Image (cartoon, rainbow, N blue to C red; front, side, top):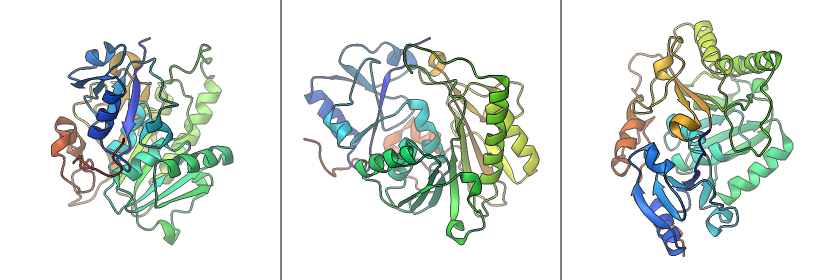
Length: 334
């Protein structure tokens, strides 16, 4: 398996890409500019780093680089987050001021990414069942400067879509429990493949969670993601729920230039994204973006791609537009 690099997401709530690049240069790292290909990222070594070719606030370092004691990490200016794990929030792209649900939120990297995209304007409702993970998440979000969020120790399946509190929720990020079969670099011992029974149980929960998420009345756009390689947890879940929902929601292709797609025998394969160490130099991952089918609904599908082609020009803030990437000078990193 390919070794996955160290990805560093710049936290736009506290700093900007240019300032972080300057900081690392002062620490003796050599900045090689924006990558033109995955191969350039694969070739990184020593104290060299690049800007990612797909995501505008992601820096890429050689795999062995450790930033856990770095000031930028301990102060919340950077988040250590795999590239594939950055896709869900980036592709959900909630507009500033939106109400958003992060359905299975711990440990909070995606929640903090959502807040940065929304510029801390709006409301994020984050749910998880694990008390310890929620406590860790709360600390992480505070460190990252996230405001306007409500954490609840609650199973997302028990959250009432009819509660007036959620009447303005237009975006949902659903990254449910999964087999984790796409995860690499977990340590020397590779976990055994999940049993057929375990996969069946996980897929049952994932289908319920996706169907439940689509029942929120104001929902316009949803991202479903897993760090699993198994079609039972990915394409099969999306297909089953879309069939159950009739024509209320549709798959959209949120990222036309992403190289890897869903499994070919799945009807909406071209609209689904897959990631893997070999093809995209990331953890194994699956992402599908669903939108409500309505006359006159805004067409979000190509906006993040426009940001990817020229992040400095991504000025749109319509629903679904990628966040502006203009240089910010808050809290200049010394």
